[in-house]
Image (cartoon, rainbow, N blue to C red; front, side, top):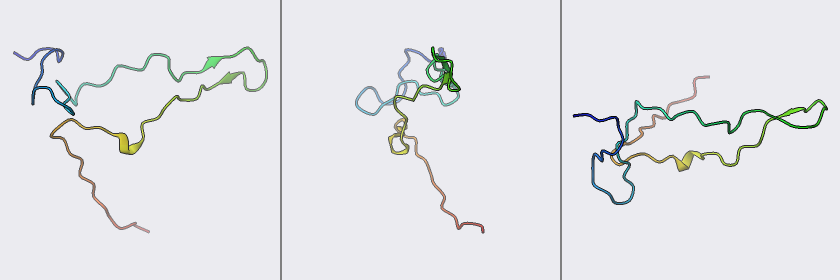
Length: 79
């Protein structure tokens, strides 16, 4: 009965904040050629330049599916 993870909406139907068929075991496919080294035309020491990332996921922008929580444990520094 279990499908391949697409097209099956589990959990609450629709609405804001729902992520259909969220599977924590399934990993994202690798991002195609986004931050890899691009060859530029200059022949100087910086011939291979790393392109700057357009945007980075800030820690407060981490979105979890409905029903998932993150528990943080605070502890004393061990020095």
